[in-house]
Image 1 (cartoon, rainbow, N blue to C red):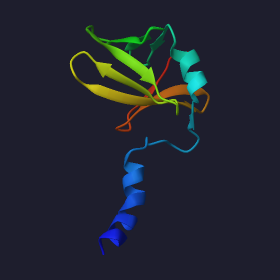
Image 2 (image 1 turned 45 degrees about the vertical axis):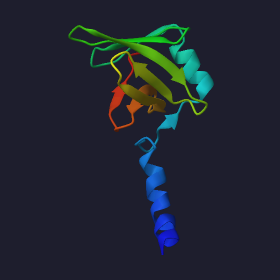
Image 3 (image 1 turned 120 degrees about the vertical axis):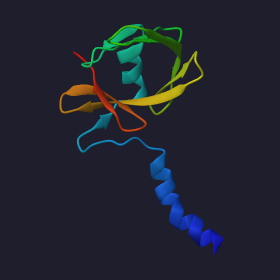
Image 4 (image 1 turned 90 degrees about the vertical axis):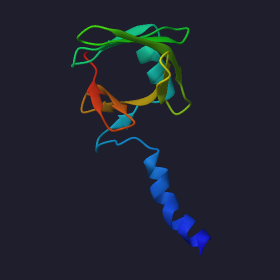
Length: 115
């Protein structure tokens, strides 16, 4: 009985780890994420700015002021994860969606990147 329950639960559990992508979203592969982020600043429409240093240093400056610092890495599947100095951790996925680049967070928030 346990094995049947596990098998029935497995597809749902596997989806829980994924990102909530919309129809038409095309996840960027790792080489494109590297080109987008390496030693670059990304400005989002809500006003925040992410800075990705080649050595792995990361900072996010909030639109209203204040900055969070951390280290980032890009996984083989192109997902980018940040370990912040304050102990928090976050992973995001960049997608191409209807002609623009959008950062999708694990909890489903979407942040379009300014061109």
